[in-house]
Amino acid sequence: MTYVLGIDGGGTKTTGIIANNEGETIVEATVGASNPNIVNRDLLLKEFSTLAERLNEKNGEAFQKISRIFAGVSGTDHPCARQTIVDTLTEVMPSTASTTVDNDAIIALYSGTMGKPGIVQISGTGSITYGINEQGERSRVGGWGHFIDERGSGYGLGHDALHATFLEFDKMGPPTKLTELLLEHFNENRMDNIIPSIYNADNPKETVASLGRLVMHATDYGDEVAKNIIKKNGRYIGKCITTLINILFKDSEMLDGVAVDQESKRKKGTIPIVLAGGLFNRLDLIQNSIAKELDNQSHPVTLIKPNTPPVYGAVLAALMQSEQQNKKKI
Image 1 (cartoon, rainbow, N blue to C red):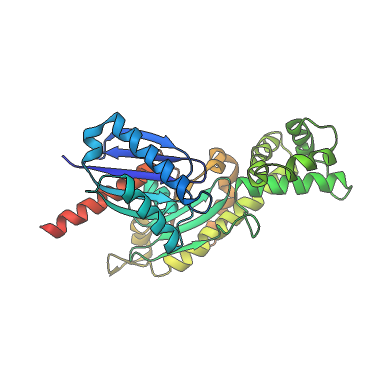
Image 2: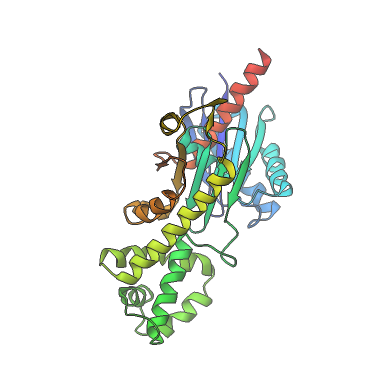
């Protein structure tokens, strides 16, 4: 019996799961951050060493028989960053294991499509739209960080909430329930008193992103300003997805190499759109505005909210690679 290891690495935590050939979880462990743009090489080595130690302690036999590792790690688009992760994992994991490191968006996609082509919209603290088509071609929209544009994310909602409340404070915008919610959140009695809590925060992006949930709350109260923020960010997400569909799936009238009519295309050629990230915990609020943008393009889509976390997408990717390798041997 051989085993695979799937890893989901990010800027906050890193989770690893050893699974058997059937995809059944044998052991799981979680350590700290592994994004190479955030942590240095020494800390990377420490976190991955700890991950290896914990997995080995829980089931040494399975750990020693890992044949394939697939790690989806944020911040690894650049080849140098990706190689850093490969080298570090090779140093601490069993020497018998072959290691692949890829963008963490891929494992989020696979957690919803079960390894099939499609598009994943990640809307958590930040946002990115990422996809892969039937030919293995990849592309992305967004994900360039909050200094450039982070709409369609917790940060995007939080930023818009602050903008709206300070417009009200400056007598330049309509009143909004968000003002009351923000003052309560920061335990202040005037909007200008919250400025130090934002600009002096250890992680201002996380601080602003945490305000996104207040927009959801205000929408539940029927606040029109909050509703418009949700609508604007939802439509932006829809535009990102539509743009990526046109980049990757513009020739999708050809399915399995055979031209099909529109009815068959609707039945067979539906493009899966995986929705990942905390923003979609309130899909009920944002789905309609996303759908309105998607209705403007001709390709049929299916929105998928995965039942499993991205680390299972990494396990699946590792199993797929093992299967391909075994076929080559035959």
